[in-house]
Length: 61
Image (cartoon, rainbow, N blue to C red; front, side, top):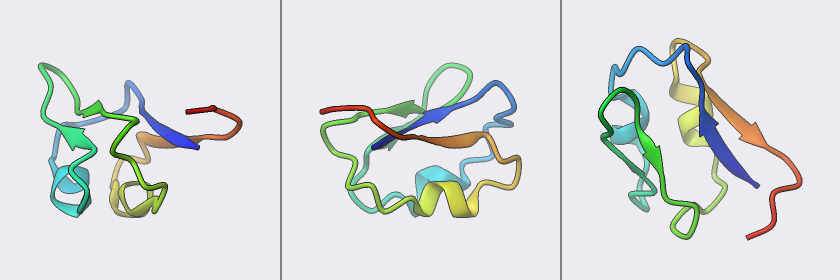
């Protein structure tokens, strides 16, 4: 599984601060996801105040 940052993202940065493995990085409009670093902890999903971080089931890495 990995995550996707949806259009509802307000670029608050909460997910960036929460991501220990640094799978999320600042992007021009919203964070970018590095699937190779994601550990599927889903802390970013839990901390997002806009519910813009969405887990994607069935994605194979």
